[in-house]
Amino acid sequence: MPQAKKRQQRLLADPLVAESLFAFKLVLTMSLIEAQDITKIYSFGDVELRALGGVSTTIEKGEFVAIMGPSGSGKSTFMNILGCLDKPTGGVYRIEGIDTKDLARDELAEVRNSKIGFVFQGFNLLSRTSAIENVELPMLYNGLAAKERHDRAREALKAVGLEQREHNHPNQLSGGQQQRVAIARALVNRAPIILADEPTGNLDTKTSEEIMNLFVRLNNESGITIILVTHEPDIAAYSRRIIRFKDGHIVNDEKK
Ligand SMILES: Nc1ncnc2c1ncn2[C@@H]1O[C@H](COP(=O)(O)OP(=O)(O)O)[C@@H](O)[C@H]1O
Ligand SMILES: [Mg+2]
Image (cartoon, rainbow, N blue to C red):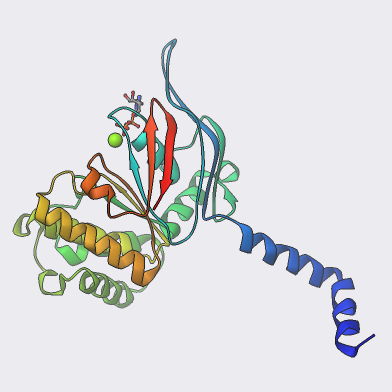
């Protein structure tokens, strides 16, 4: 038997090596996001509302996904579960292989903080606070020094083209600029996933295009996985995959 082959066999016989290889394979085959038969039921007294009726899908690292569907079809409910803002009633949700069911409240918050950046329709910026302070907010919980927080916030504002506006308050910025501050805030923890629920819903067509081009650039250049909800086909056209919801179910899932 050749020397190299012998050495390989000896290595594989070592339980520690075998175990590491198994873990490595698991990481290689694991999806970034894995939803299995997810249900969400809201109860009001004895009335039950089934917002999600069993949703299964996987999303890989680097995808750019649009979620579409009529109002009330469960899009935001699903996004809240993906973002670890809410837990499903039933089913399994794994993010980077971590089953969120096993996590305590603070552990779930930690996953959310490190893995997900949120962008909302209404920007959700603090109004009495400058752009840079808004961007620094998510870093208050992860023990970074003030200087590092400031540098990172600056870098994120630069990435969205707002380095000149760091001292402006939200009311001194246009809607598009406010949404760019919100995107900088979503980037600042270097999370691998951005979840955006109707991020262009309050913006005019031209500004919407600018925001979508920014998402495309972040997806292409930084490999950030983007999942966004929209009801506008023009906006969904920027994505490479469209998942359609109806009555709490996925009714269509198409890749370009
Ligand atoms: N926090 C909540 N409490 C009770 N019902 C809710 C809650 N959030 C959503 N729903 C209901 O769940 C269904 C799905 O809502 P949602 O996920 O917001 O839909 P979409 O984002 O597609 O418009 C709707 O019937 C809605 O009224
Ligand atoms: Mg919604």
